[in-house]
Image (cartoon, rainbow, N blue to C red; front, top):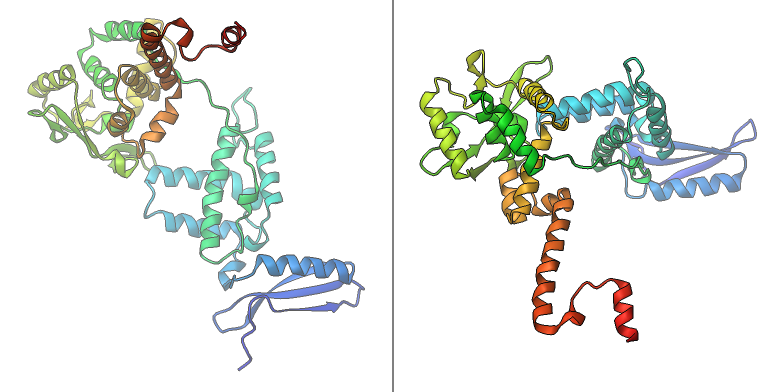
Length: 401
């Protein structure tokens, strides 16, 4: 039996056409045979430099025959591996992005030959003409946010390939994805909230639904998936155990919450608890908010979205998304003095730092109010000249005086 050649072992030869060829061992087949990587150059000095780069890149790497698969084959394999840990909706989102945008352009490329330059070229192409079926007058290019999301998914897939010894490095590590342009967060002000609730008060069914949403900040799938078994009438609390989402094919199903922190118990404001107690006494459905036409079925999240748009238009209010009701609740909660850790628990965020990062506009206002309070306190005891956070001009004037 031939001696097993170690990874990194190589050889150099001059070809009949005058070019130089080098190869190094980068892994082994199941039978022990070597897997080679070949490099070429016009002269021996250039080839030596290329070989050195490859030897460094494959140091400590022992690839398998699976490394010969294409990127498209690996993406299919990776998605199968991820199916056991991802929510169906998230998995379908990943699969759709890979099928529509990545595999048509790079799917046939060998996994080990994928480079950072290939990914940069892909992202540029997607930004120019990545939209599969653009509507009339719609830009053919994908947004920076969408391309950034595709990069994130690809990065995860290629990291898994590296961790499993299929590639020596993750080429996505070397690529700067398009910058995401964050749109200003839209919320309803206190005045707009009053207008909204007044406008829907005549419709008891939807008033209960949106009042509960605005006082809990639940995700759309979470509030639509609430059952009476989740409501603790004695303690005035709700358990968030599930969320509604659509499977491939459009079927509405109840599944796990978005994160492990998403499964939680929240204490309701007294007014919301009373509203739900009254609603429960008259209910004949297992769902707190059932389908208006089918009490045995939960509220369709799409119906809730359409109803929100209808009410907003009728009341002459800004055209916000359903998720902006969650932002509205969070912003007013922080502004009212709810601490970030408590709010993170209510919202189902994994970390309070994420809550603070998301609502920096609110925490900025809170810091300003804190500065005003502390400033007034110090002024009372130390005089105007000791007031904190002076602007540079007044500080300079005081110093010169």
